Each structure stands twice: as C-alpha cells, then as structure tokens.
Image 1 (cartoon, rainbow, N blue to C red):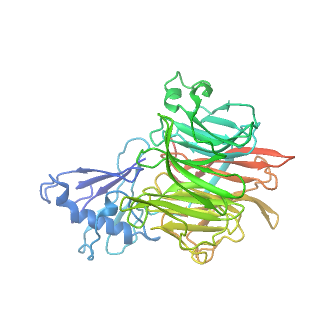
Image 2: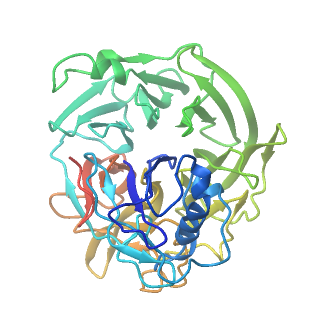
Image 3: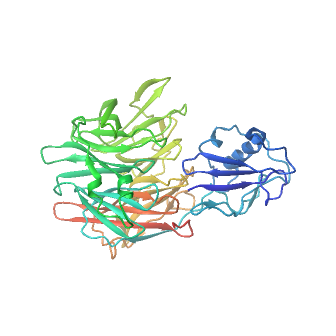
Length: 499
C-alpha cells in the first residue's frame, strides 16, 4: 500500500500541488515534481528541500496525538527550527489514486491548527472479530500473509499447514509427514512473495531441526483460480546443521537473505544465529551463545548508529535477551540490553524501517521497547498487569501493531486479551484508561460460540493483510486431553477495506 500526499506550499492552490509524494509500505518515497507558475522551475528535487524539511517537521511535531516518524528518505532530512510563515499550508487532499491506495484528507496548518487528518496520525481503532468456518484444527502457532494479500500460510503445532485462499474462501490442508511427528514454530514469507519458509523440529527420531520451503511463485503460476493442492510445492531443505529445533526465521526488509534461529529445547539452553540461502541450501554462521532461557523469536532492528542488527528474545523457563550487530564492520554480540528483568518474552516485532521494536513479556505483562541498542526498563514499559498479553505484530505500514494474548475471565466476562498500539504512542501511565495511548481491543465472548475457547486458549499469532486495516488471528490450546484450534479475522471499523 502507498500513501498519496499532495503538498501545496506558499499559498499555492491545493488543486495544483507542487510535489506528489508516494509513501510506500516499505517506507521509501517516490517523488513527482509538478510545475507551478508561482514557484521556480522544479527540475531538481533539491529546489524543494526546504519544503520537504518542513513536511518532516510537521510529521514530528504537528499531529494532534503524539510524535510521528517518517521512515526512509524523509527520516534522514534535518528538521528546521522555524515554522512556516502565516498563511502557508500543507494540503492533504482527497485524490484519485490507484486501487488499494490510501489518500490523505483535509488540510493542515503548521501554525498549530488541528488537522482534519494526517497520513501518519492514527485514531484509536475499534476492532471486529470473526471466526472462520475451518474445522478439524489443533492449536495454531504462526501465520503470515503473502505480500499480495490473496492468501496466507498458517501452521498448527502438530505439523499441519494451511494455505488459505481469502479471495475464494478455500482452505488447503497440507500434511508433510505423519501428524504429530513434525512440530512447527514459525512460518514466514519472503518480501517478494516468491517463497515461504516453515521452521520447527521432527520428533520421530529424537528432536532434529527442520526447514521446509514453499514455492509460492510456482503455486501461483500453476493454474486457474482457485488454485489446486499446494502440497507438491513444499520441499524439504537438506544438509542443514544438526540442531534440536529451528525456532524462528526472519527476512530483512531489504530483500536480503533470511536468518534462522536455532535453540535447545531444554536446559542448559543455548542459541545460534545463521544466515540462510534458500536457493543454495547453505547456511552462514553469525553468532552463538549460552542463554538462561529457551529462545523463541528474532527481529531485525537498527543499533544506535542506524546500522542493522538482530534482536533475540527468550521466554522458555525464564528470560533472556541478546542483540547481534556490527560496529565499524566488526561483529558484536551484546548480552546486556541495559535492563534484564523483563520476564519471559516469546515475541518481538520491528517497526517497518527498523528504527525500534516492541517485545512482549508474557510473565511480566509488559510491552517493552528496544531502540538504539537498549531495552526499556520495567518501570518505563507499560504494564498491563490484568491482561494476559503474549505477542505483538506490526502492520506493514507501521501505523499500528496488534498485541495479542490469552483467554481471561473477569467479573463473569470471558474474553481474549488484545491491545492496539499506534506508532510512537508509547506513553501509558495508567493502562486501560484514557491516559494510556494504547487501547484495549479484546475479543468479547471468547468462551462462547463461535469461538468456544476453553480455559488456557491463546491467540498465538497475528498477520495483517497487506494494503488494508484487516488481518488474521490464529491460536488454540493443547494438553493431554484437549486439542483446540481456530482461525479468525479482524478488521478496524471505518478503516481501509481490502479489495
């Protein structure tokens, strides 16, 4: 999805903007220069650098509900100290745009008048949830949307995969071995959508880490719509290092090679990071360490010099957090993130552009923020002491993140704990009140039809559908007597609808 901003400056008529900025989902900008008789001939972008700087300042200071950062090109521009002269406006207009493109509305004045709407100002959302009529499920642990938004890939812990066609409402069940032998931990599509990786371990002869590759491009090109059985498009990756489990996989936003996290399943715990080339089937060792807990998730997030790094969070039988980065071209593994009393943490998600990440402590029930090489302290992190929060996932645009959790019963009300976070609105002195920038958006009646969730059931993962304010949730519950799983959808009331 792109955001179209029509910018009119110096009193120029809004109908004749001077710059057209397409802010893409990855944070990059496409800029068209449109001649205007009142301004110099716009042959070069640097003629408008001052206007871009003032736009960046507006992004930082002018929205009514907190700070707002622009990733990509604008983020690197210096801010100016002075405001625009009286009467100078930036116009954010309704405009004709390609399908699926969101446009700004209203007009804004840099002198402090409240804008009607700004592309990076995000109002609190009201969420609606529905369960999909997909039966025969055990607990689902991971889900990810294909970048075109037409289908998603979801994994049951017991080894079953689902390729779900949301356009045609068709769910394809994929079994790559005897159910129960394979234990899946995570699924992840590549940024270009050509493939997906599925990681976990095989229990048939001890615990051995496994990786499966889904040839998404091949399946898409395979035939008519709706497409047939995707099972033949899954393949086993052989020749990998022998590990107990591959517990997480992450692709960088720049389209580079993915990174695999392997970890031990019992004490003494340890973890290894490897870069993985799916085409060649080769891995490159990055770093390893003993840990005080089993590690479960990773995320690419920049260090204090805006260089990339990998944050590792651990939440099995304790807490640990590590950060791998490079300083001056030399690798560096940091075992101390500044504050180390966060509680068991199993999920982390990075704001698009890599400037910061959110990590959820399920034992401490805190939403921690990692930025410039440091994790927030427990006193700084918002504490949702009465909500069983477990994980977090950012929207592709970075405007929102959805924090998901488990089944709860308070005062006879049964619900699944869910919290909305809006970009850079981290202040929350009193959770569950108007003073908190984060909003409870829990799933009501979670113990009743159509959810029928038993005690202990969790929303284990969230995937936002690209290009709109909708997505998918998956979860369930497993013990020696009960196997329960669900796939559901969510949408924001009044938000951008998918085609």
